[in-house]
Image (cartoon, rainbow, N blue to C red):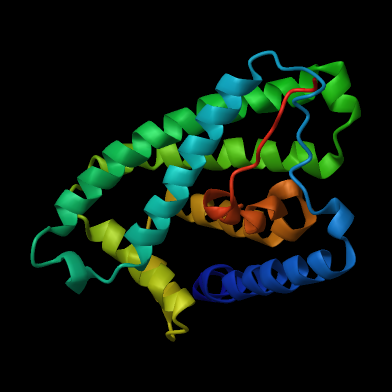
Amino acid sequence: MSYFNTLLFGLYPYLAGTVFLVGSLMRFDHGQYTWKAGSSQMLTTRNMRVASNLFHVGIITIFFGHLVGLLTPHWVYAPFMSAGTKQVIAIVVGGIAGVMCLVGGAMLAYRRLTNARVKASSSLMDTLIIVLLVVQVSLGLLTIIPALGHLDGGVMIQLAGWAQGIVFFQGGAAEHLIGVGLIYKLHILLGLTIILLFPFTRLVHVWSVPFGYVTRRYQIVRRRA
């Protein structure tokens, strides 16, 4: 069990991270015509705005919540917030964002699987990645159930210790997950798998966040005389 724990949570994260970075760079260099979100809104707009907004607001909130929550050392917030309080905040905010992401993602997945025009224009990876994201956010919501049974923040500190160990190349990171519940481990493994598949899907458009749009000069549009 120790061997598999190290393999899955000590080595697999670096494999997924390497494929994520190198694969993204190679795709940008060799396949820029495929570097796009590939929106299907022009095919049908039914429920698209609601589903897309729910999904994107939810998943962006979840992403930054995980980023800050897992990678912030305990000593940074310990003077003004206990681990238990941080966990309750994570449950509330993550729960709301998770439900938004789940509802929006499920609507998008249903649309992609049942709408003939959207389905015909979708690749296998388009369908696979939205289904995986829906399953992933479902697992994340399911972790709330055991989390409510231990509001002292102990498990959250273990998960943060693992994440910080991986990101900052600290030895023995996988040992932090010994004794952690199965639902947490499944959530982590599927998340790593999504990172592994990232360069081969439309998720690459995340790299092209249009920050320049905020600061660019206004465009003047005149009506034709």
